[in-house]
Length: 72
Image (cartoon, rainbow, N blue to C red; front, side, top):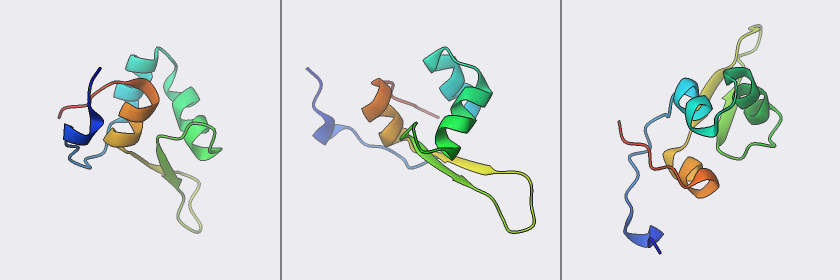
Protein backbone atom coordinates (compact mmCIF):
# COMPACT_ATOMS: atom_id res chain seq x y z
CA UNK A 1 0.00 0.00 0.00
CA UNK A 2 1.37 3.38 -1.02
CA UNK A 3 1.40 6.13 1.60
CA UNK A 4 0.01 9.35 0.17
CA UNK A 5 1.50 11.43 2.97
CA UNK A 6 4.97 10.99 1.44
CA UNK A 7 3.98 11.79 -2.14
CA UNK A 8 4.75 15.29 -3.34
CA UNK A 9 2.72 17.00 -6.04
CA UNK A 10 4.02 19.96 -8.00
CA UNK A 11 0.64 21.61 -8.56
CA UNK A 12 1.40 21.80 -12.28
CA UNK A 13 -1.51 21.46 -14.65
CA UNK A 14 -2.07 17.98 -16.07
CA UNK A 15 -2.98 18.30 -19.77
CA UNK A 16 -6.48 17.16 -20.76
CA UNK A 17 -4.92 14.86 -23.38
CA UNK A 18 -2.95 13.04 -20.66
CA UNK A 19 -6.04 12.66 -18.48
CA UNK A 20 -8.05 11.30 -21.41
CA UNK A 21 -5.31 8.79 -22.24
CA UNK A 22 -4.96 7.42 -18.71
CA UNK A 23 -8.73 7.25 -18.19
CA UNK A 24 -9.19 5.71 -21.67
CA UNK A 25 -11.81 8.32 -22.46
CA UNK A 26 -12.30 11.01 -25.07
CA UNK A 27 -10.94 14.51 -24.30
CA UNK A 28 -14.47 15.91 -24.50
CA UNK A 29 -15.59 13.42 -21.83
CA UNK A 30 -12.93 14.83 -19.50
CA UNK A 31 -13.74 18.45 -20.34
CA UNK A 32 -17.49 18.04 -19.82
CA UNK A 33 -16.94 16.07 -16.62
CA UNK A 34 -14.86 18.89 -15.19
CA UNK A 35 -17.29 21.58 -16.41
CA UNK A 36 -20.28 19.79 -14.86
CA UNK A 37 -18.42 18.91 -11.63
CA UNK A 38 -18.98 15.15 -11.81
CA UNK A 39 -15.30 14.55 -12.50
CA UNK A 40 -13.61 15.86 -9.33
CA UNK A 41 -10.09 16.32 -10.65
CA UNK A 42 -9.93 20.02 -11.46
CA UNK A 43 -11.76 23.16 -12.49
CA UNK A 44 -13.05 24.73 -15.69
CA UNK A 45 -13.06 28.51 -16.04
CA UNK A 46 -14.80 30.59 -18.68
CA UNK A 47 -14.07 34.32 -18.88
CA UNK A 48 -17.00 36.70 -19.27
CA UNK A 49 -17.80 37.18 -22.93
CA UNK A 50 -15.83 34.11 -24.01
CA UNK A 51 -17.18 30.86 -25.38
CA UNK A 52 -14.06 28.85 -24.49
CA UNK A 53 -13.07 27.26 -21.20
CA UNK A 54 -9.66 27.04 -19.60
CA UNK A 55 -8.94 23.93 -17.54
CA UNK A 56 -6.80 23.13 -14.56
CA UNK A 57 -6.37 19.48 -13.60
CA UNK A 58 -4.73 18.96 -10.22
CA UNK A 59 -2.08 16.22 -10.13
CA UNK A 60 -3.08 15.40 -6.55
CA UNK A 61 -6.80 15.16 -7.30
CA UNK A 62 -6.04 13.08 -10.39
CA UNK A 63 -4.00 10.71 -8.22
CA UNK A 64 -6.76 10.49 -5.61
CA UNK A 65 -9.34 9.73 -8.31
CA UNK A 66 -7.35 7.36 -10.53
CA UNK A 67 -4.18 6.34 -8.69
CA UNK A 68 -2.09 7.78 -11.54
CA UNK A 69 0.95 9.81 -10.54
CA UNK A 70 1.61 12.58 -13.09
CA UNK A 71 5.21 13.58 -13.58
CA UNK A 72 6.04 16.41 -15.94
